[in-house]
Image 1 (tube, rainbow, N blue to C red):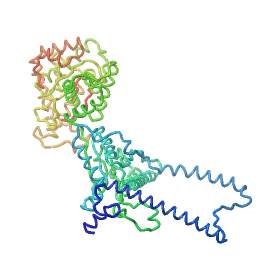
Image 2: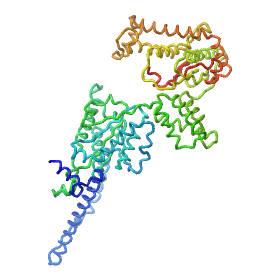
Image 3: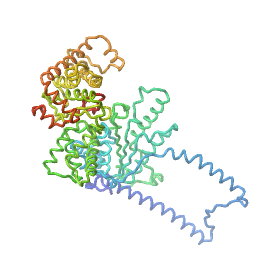
Image 4: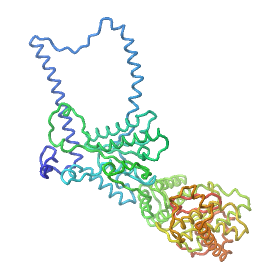
Length: 599
């Protein structure tokens, strides 16, 4: 077929050059005409039968009779027939319902999110807009340019990064029905029912795409049914997963399965361009465990494209907060709000888009509790404290315990302030929050994707500063440094075994947890390097805190008196010379987010 004939096939009525309408709309128009033709054929058949019966009656012939003649004693058989019918319904009906697709269908006009609602992710908006354009012009691309647009797209990324919202936006922008389903809802306790549900889901997608010119199906938590078939435990689990993955492979491979219609069943000729352009559906799947999926599923031809959703950067977090606050009543000037938003964006490193949305909602709750109708900047800061640090439970300690916790937290806060590290100490507290007996909250002004050995050594010293302060001011250490030592050992081990910073090029990633335990407990050159690194970091912290011992004592005494010190109060005691993740360090068990665990 040459290019001119391909161009002719693009017209709805066979005419060339009708390309102003996109392919989705043309397929929907052609499907509507097909339904009208099928309805006309059905009406013509009914009218023919009725006309034939009238002709026979007019000519004196016997008219056609469609009545059902029952035997004269049919009442004797009625109870048995009714009982048989009832048993059939009781036995067969549940089995029929088990194979139904568990999806939820949504019309595009009922989707409550738009493309402009995706804040702080310009590259995602561009990718989604490009995908919509390719999908709406799939036939033009294939017949004219020989390029097939993606038929299945995989969304991967951490939870709360906007994968489900992106799928809804695609359905709204494309203007086609949206079928939403969770992968776990396909699973059934009866053998083979999972495959039946999958077939039913894809069959419904094909029917909707044939009726409306296109449809979008979205499977959430796709790894629940698409996990790799190798490396499984028992044979029953392996057979079940292999069967489900095999069914997925078949359905993804047969995208172009023809639809049944009265015209095809009667072998009547096609009209226009229906045979040339068959409606297509687009399959979307979301997962945060893309590495666990079966390789046969994510190869080109099945899932043709992968869009990665990552945690937002500081700039993106600022844009997300500004976009969310635009929908709400906010007090204060624009400059004051922007300063607060920038500060909150710096304090929420590692928080997802869903977390930021919840933070703004929490600020609204705090404003409601104050009895005001607007959200202030202080509400945002209070919401950050309640979400990331936890609710304060006071200081239920004895005076001796309270002094020791104050010394520990003062060590962390003073080292972070006086060492000229690129962090800002926002809060030092001895109040109990969850499992943490006290905490030091610090945050970075910018996101850092790489860190040097000097920066990691400063981080190590800051983790050990609480232990050093106890040893320096009180003469002995306590059990409050347990979690500090765990994090410090993990970081030092990474510097030695993963980052090539201490004379070895070995990596600990190939080792299993038991092998790592043996490594830490055994005698080896690498263990000696980790131990030396920790002692070096401790010595740096001890040198700095010893130099400013009087200032550390002033912070300790103020902490014992007030229980919490803000950034401004620390500046009064230590001077304004601090350099500009919420990282939490403190006595007892600390709370910290995953972003700060990554060096």
